[in-house]
Amino acid sequence: MALLEVKDLRISYETGGGRLAAVGGVSFEVSEGETLAVVGESGAGKSSLSLGLMRLLPRNALSPEGRVFLDGVECLSLSEEEFRKQVRWKKLSMVFQGAMDSLHPVRRVGDQIAEPLLLDGRTDKTAAFGRVAELLSLARLPTDISRRYPHELSGGMKQRVMIAMALACSPKLVILDEPTSALDVIIQAQIMNLLKQLKRDLKLGSLFVTHDLALASDLADRIAVMYAGEFVEIGTAEQVLGSPRHPYTKKLLGSIPSLYDDRRPEFIPGTPPKMTSPPAGCYFSPRCPEACELCSTHPELIVCGTGQHARCHLVIES
Ligand SMILES: Nc1ncnc2c1ncn2[C@@H]1O[C@H](COP(=O)(O)OP(=O)(O)OP(=O)(O)O)[C@@H](O)[C@H]1O
Image (tube, rainbow, N blue to C red; front, top):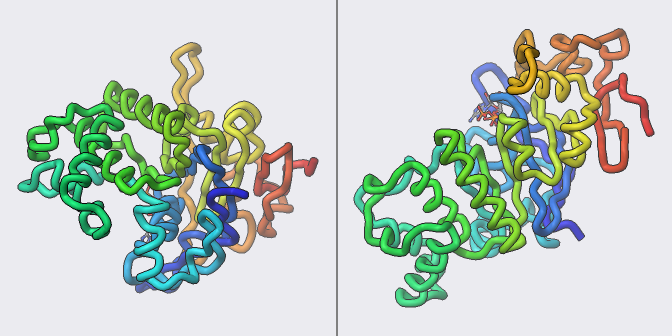
């Protein structure tokens, strides 16, 4: 059985301009120890998906529709209190986008990491600080930073602290929302190595949310490409990167600069549709170089390889 099973998840917001469909019927699974990267440009719905799974959506979000099974428990039908006690941080946790800047500036790092353990009520202070030392070492940080304040740490160290905090209650699955976006490339590589190590050593499952397909390829077992609230392609990293089937995935790959030839990175003309009034047909068709009359109807995901699916009429079903 999959660790996480998401079925037809839909998330919408009430806005001044009408109802906005941020996540429009997304289905996927993540197994124990597996990394699924969710890749898409800004506004594709990646953060809404992540916050929806954590049940931390903003107030103007409508109740999510669909089913979310985590370790066999259907999460959307739990009450807020049940979800907080049984699931959030314990089975499913998250490293938020830009979160390293949200550490409390005048509280010691160790106290902040210990907080969720102490709040749980099942751990005393000595045990909590023993666990803090373990978590710091898991995140490859010296244990003496426990007594330091956030302003004494570099950006990379603060991000390691955020990762340590996400692991505090030993979750089985972590959502990593753009975990390296604010870091320079050297530190980014170090954090990616740490994530790979945690995946291997702890058999940690993860949903790795990023706009960067090249970065996704470093950690992902499978990749889902998200466009206008939908998965337009999903498959193993090898399939999506080596033989992409959806025109949007091909364009995303073409936009990655190459060090080894004179090819110029392509750009994708146009912008994603307004999700308060999405077009009737394929959402990508106004920007698609391969669009044809078939694209005036909305495509379903089509099986185009073992475990590979693409939402495009031009894909031949296999
Ligand atoms: N609280 C909100 N109210 C109304 N619309 C929202 C809200 N939050 C997000 N949206 C809209 O939902 C859509 C998906 O946004 P979301 O932030 O989930 O995308 P994203 O892929 O995570 O983008 P980014 O990488 O920029 O965070 C966008 O059209 C966005 O404008």
